[in-house]
Image (cartoon, rainbow, N blue to C red):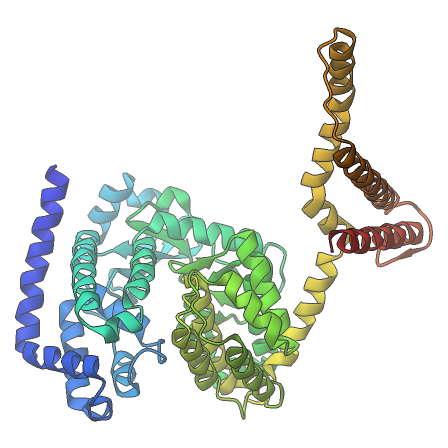
Length: 549
């Protein structure tokens, strides 16, 4: 009960601050703008009112970190807001004055250690100061240089109070103003709230760093961060220091005697690997979060915000990318429906035609000629027009691609994104039809067949016992019996074909590594068995389709 009361007190305190700031910057103006929007009569005038949007931005900055971060999130949603407002959102900065911290006592209290036992030195001046945390450079007794990330005092309570209040406000606006309902602002906020709460947890960021490192273990193109669990908790994070220049610093990369285009290739390939192979990718890959080391490796830093996909989400994303690259608008829209959280498409044919136009533009333009932001803005508008709400990882993915495209423009504007993605499509297709993948996907079916074969003798014996004891009774209708008999014969034929297909497939798996002529690391006899298995399976499916129709 005390916790609930404390949260409500904090919420009321932040509400008072909100009202004070909104009044300072003209609360009545805010209301009149929404009223105008709701009537949709004066949108052009609103878009041109740069002074009003500037006041919005200044109010957000004064309201503090939660509002600033929400504004930064909205700055990527050019499909939802007027360009003049987006321009102001993009001006929002996460750099704030550093908090005065007595560093050594603070660390000793938080980590319950004697700092001198672990560190030879720590610079008391923070190298960066953001709304949630500030960072320092230190050196361990082993000589390793590290980054210490310290959460700001009381930031968790402030953010939680802000989120409660913001949700109340957005729900109120959603109930009263159609323009807020149309842009699904509540959905955008819910995704933001989940993201910022993850960012508040350094324990969560520590896990992200460790998983990211495991995913890229052995990859020579990337330098991943190392985390020091004994010097970290939910308020302090100790990670290895990565020396390097920002990915968009072309002159800096050249000064390291590195080729910017080769570095861009590495960066793009690493991001595609995160998306299409790992299903776990950096949610904010702006240039400040991607470094190039003196040895030519790429390093992704600041993993507080990541996007995670389930295996099914990843499979659907792979399908989406395949159809996107090969310009199959029809299947693209069908996959989009499967991915979406909510769908209300007005006209399927019109949507397919609109996607086909987008795909034709992408296929015929280099990155230098292509306006990626405009294309994604059109994509988002199509989603909004059809009331299609996608999972948050899709919006983060779009944001990531736009940021990567910006980096590409600075380093090598001639590259063609489609050409970069095609090798991954081939890789995905090869993996999906590999024996290992087919066996993995069908292991449930094979296990069920094994269970049925194992229990069949016992079931048959039970039937015979009942028959001998006179308990087995059969009531037969002649016509029904003939229909059943005919159906049973057909099913037996299909079952035999399925069993033969499965046996051939399993035989191919067992002989895959025998020492003889092989192709793609798999013996030729296995490929022959797979081919026969596949042919019989297709014949069975065609026969089943014919019988059902």
